[in-house]
Image (cartoon, rainbow, N blue to C red; front, side, top):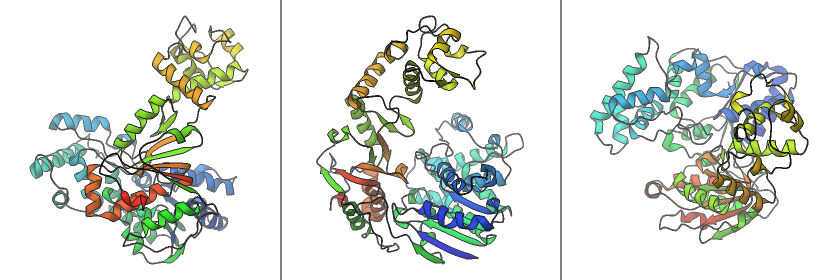
Length: 509
């Protein structure tokens, strides 16, 4: 078994390398179903699959059946159905029985990133015990104070266990259970090529799963960047990447970072003690770093932006400001206007100009029109309409009950939109000069921004009390977090001073 370790600093194109230098070269001599490409999120796995299909347009999605996440591989290999997985309703029932709020570790995911993060301490400790391969009591001893202590945690864990085993004779799994069960069975597929992306974010039991897959593989490629290992608190174990033996390849050219921003990022990451030293060059542009004494939104008038905060609490403050100022933004897969309203406005403008809209656009359009005023029938009553059809203004007027005059503006036509939302959208259009359905501004936690980039990046230096305390215990963790933040910028980096005494000052050095 040949093992290749690919270390890819920010913007050096790890995924591009894995697809173009590995998958594209392996496929002529390897069946697609003998190549395993395991990414950290479904989105990343899908992106890798789409890029692979470019090289082999005659292939189909199903040919690449092992382009997925490790969790989904375990789910498939165990032959599970959705009904076999714990859901929100299950945790609500348990919460009522135990008189304590229990969150679903399967659903509380950091943005689109595949790390579960239960808010309540009980579910966190129970889940982390399995992730780390610890006993529950050992994990409890590492967890610090929790109300009710060990007796309460033990009761919750036992009740949860009994519930999982008592559902009609079939065990109900959470995400971590799937991997634990996978490791017990000899069900790892035989692969000619095994590829693991974002390996620095794998937990102890995920690394065990990788080892099971590697045992049956002929060639192994493991890609990651220990400098971007920022999920230690969620069980990630980057030391397994650092300590693994194999042919080491360091990608040495960033296609994202300009000179000044790379210098600032390297100055920060070089303070981390246990890391693989890397020599890599920036792109041939100077770039720009701006220090702001406080949050300032004047710069947001043009260009695409990524605004990063250490926690959601600080992003909440920014979101309030942007809404008041009338900026159109995107956060956690939702725009500030809302997908349905964006679709409705776009649909109205398209048919006004003589264009076509599809059935889903039609439903969103009619959703915001009052029945018997703007439209004869509401959106729920579009019976007998072919969902594969497209529609023009004239067709809707003649066949589908549209009664709104063609010269109406969107806010006249969509009369069910609340006035406060109309005012906000109107301000957005005034600021932008036109209505662009895709926001220029994205708000994200640093952890949720992995893999993201923007021409302009604004980094809030604020630390929460918990993060500030963590910094003084383990400075390297926060250094890696802010290193990830700095390295999202393609042209301009804006560093914002905190209004409190808690800030990550090293980014300004």
